[in-house]
Amino acid sequence: MKPDVRVLVIIPAYNEEGSIGDVIRNIRAVSANIDVVVINDGSKDLTVEVAQAAGATVVDLPFNLGIGGAMQTGYLYAYQNDYDIAIQTDADGQHDPSYIPNLIRPIVDGEVNFVVGSRYVEKTTYRSSAMRRVGMIFFANLIRLVTKRRVTDPTSGFRAADRNIIRMFADYYPVDYPEVEVLVHIARNGYSFKEISVEMSARQAGRSSITPLKSIYYMVKVGLAVMISATRPR
Amino acid sequence: MDFFNIYSISILFSIFFVIFVLSLVRRRKLREQYSIMWLILGFVTVLVSLKTNWLEALATYLGIYYAPSLLFLIALLFCFAYLLHLTLVISKLSDRVVRLTQELALTQRTAHQEQEQESDEKLSAKAEGSVKL
View (cartoon, each protein chain N blue to C red):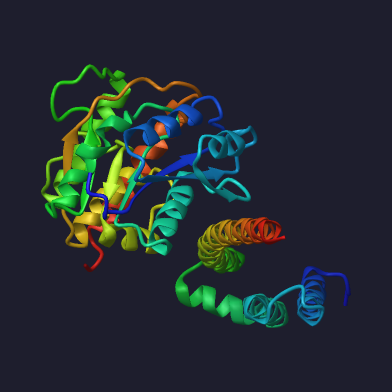
């Protein structure tokens, strides 16, 4: 990794004391040149203490903003502290930090503005539920319809952004279920993205926040947001 | 004439409503910008209660047989419009609260960092001093 490139990993965390320590230590084991910022989204457990003990910078939101608001805080931090690349990763340990060099390489090489770690570019060991696959196909087709680009893993939360994207996200980031909308937003603003293959494991601790009712709201909300964004002037 | 008929009651109620809204504004409980819609509503109700034949005439003109239903329609449309306006206000407020919360958390983080640096410098200054002694 080039030492002159300043890299930040953003980890939004809500009640993740069980997994966040290992996540931070694993990232720091990959490279000492990577800074880690944990955005504590109003956790009621020891997330802040565990993250600080593991050596991360912690930005402590006074109450829960939800994933979009927390993630944007991380991008604001990256923008204000002048980072070259911002990586976002989940606090539950499903993203393997050893892929970070692969994830940022297309940005370091100046190839694209945004990189998404995908479970499905190549055949990996990750297996998902039928409901999840249905949602995935729906979102992938939606993105292809609006942006004319092929995406295999539109909801992946393992991503890397260059300076342009950091500045754009600091200004606007969707409030809830942001992953799909963000890809459309990037394409509509004339920036490029690509997927690289990564392995993902099942979450270490905590529970997925997606319930059947929420997943219907997820699809409707994101579908609406994407269709409307397609009508906005560039 | 029976004083307590529906018209006089609605006039009294409307006048009371307008006075109540004005007093809310006076006590700074309600912003002027949001009071205007309520005041208009109050005056329209007073007017309609005083001049019932105006409503009847408008209803006849529009081909509505039962005049009060025109009143219901107008009231319903007013409510919908105002609810939409309120959700607009809420959306703007939510966006601002999110941004303020983010800026607050980041500013606190910076302040905390500076404080730590300062105390570190003081400690090292003290250490240097002790070496000199």
